[in-house]
Image (cartoon, rainbow, N blue to C red; front, side, top):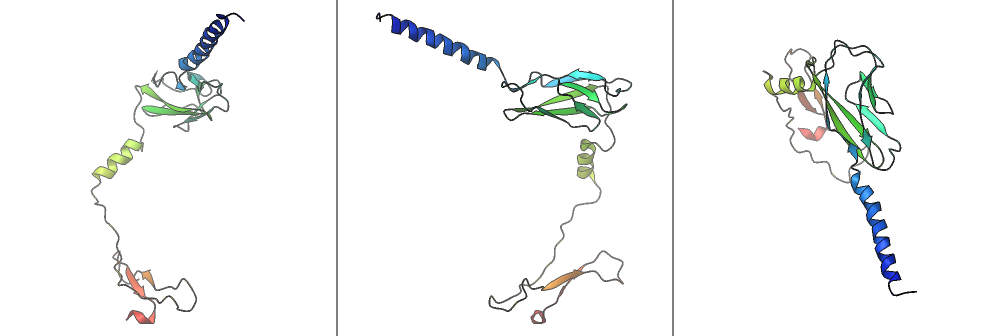
Length: 183
C-alpha cells in the first residue's frame, strides 16, 4: 500500500459521511408551512379537497395520523383537507395536528372572512372573566375529630354527613356529626 492511499481513503470516507449528514440536515420534521389562509366560501362541500398539507417526519411518515380541531373536517392520508358534510360556518381558525412515532407538529388554518361561531372557546373564556356572578369557595368548617388508632372496625368510619334542610328554600347546607363523641 502506498503512503498516500490511507489519506485518500480518509478524505473519501469523510466526503461520504458529510453527504449523508447533509441530507439529514436538509429535512426539518413537521409541517413545511405553519399558517395557511383559506378564503371563506359560501359553503364547504362534502369530500371536496380544500387544501393540501405537507408533513414530513424525515423518516418516511410511517403511521402518520392527523387530527383536526373541528369535527366537520378531516385530513386524508395524502394530506388533503376535506369537509365531512356540507357546512357554511366553521369559525375563524382550525388547527391540524399531525403525529408520527418520530415527530409531531401543528398547523393553523385561518379562514379569511369567517365568523366566530356561537359558543367558541374565546366566548367561553370571555364570559368567565366578565360574569356578574362572583366565584365563591365552598367551605365546611369542622372541628378536629379524634379517632384513636386502635379503635375497632368498621373502617373507614363515617363521622358525619352533609345535609340540607328540606324546609328552608335557601341554598344552605349543614354538616351533621354522626358519632357520639362529637358533642
